Image (tube, rainbow, N blue to C red):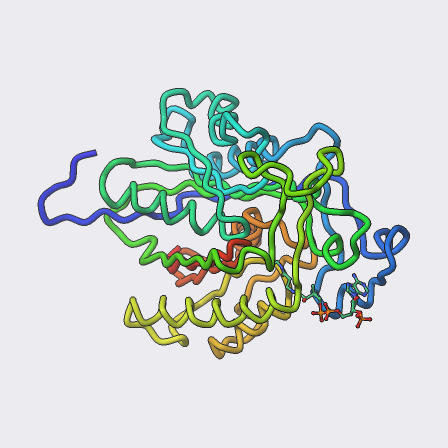
Length: 330
Ligand code: COA
């Protein structure tokens, strides 16, 4: 794409989509298999139910469904795509990437395709990558997907983690535009906190003492994650507003990572924002990692709550630790 001297290119959201697998598991159903209760889960996390992928249904399948909905909303075809970026920490395979698998199903052969693994911040990281490619003029139309099947790496006998997670996907089509769009993105990580939220099963690092057949599973020190997440998110929302010379009262909507209602409420308090201006979907699907921000965004747009021209702050926090934000005018 050529850029006229002096003109600026921004990336704008042209369409959104999302997809949740059909099967739902309520808190009461979970309480039949682990020592927990609907009351405990709702009061600590805000989660009421989660969706689980069917046997054989993969991250790529969920991402594909979200993608076709986003492309339809944006009015773009596979041939229009210059790039596909998928945020995921539960890829279908080690390789090819889930982005390549989705590309083949879409028939978008030839465009660039890659996965970004930043755990629950995967979508915000992927959005930032896509935005940069558009701003520098290397791409005009980018499909950004956040998709996960965390149910495959949850230990369903461990009540401290299994109540939190679910499967799902969301997607946006970003297009080059002379009007803003994405105003800025801010990405951070702190790899020294690896052991507070991780999955020990690897490729190069081997199985880290986990029996190969025992499967990969999420290990988390929930309390420490909670405290760090609140601080990191406070800091990144302050950074985002400062970078754009904006006041917190300028924001129309907070569209946060849907991990835990109490973390979301803490960020809303920091922004002096009424919960009426915060998109909350965690009750419906639990923590879907990279899927959560685009799921919430799509839900908000399709319900008519988020309107064109409004200022949205997206944020996420996840294993790594990783965290980040995106400020955009829809
Ligand atoms: N049902 C019932 N009791 C549970 C339980 C469950 N599902 N999970 C833990 N408990 C128990 C604990 O065993 C503990 O019991 P004890 O006091 O007898 O030892 C008690 O509840 C309190 O545990 P604690 O871990 O201190 O609870 P908490 O208030 O910190 O809430 C989380 C736990 C996981 C909900 C909370 O720490 C959290 O949300 N952390 C952030 C997690 C997250 O979002 N991670 C992903 C980030 S991307």
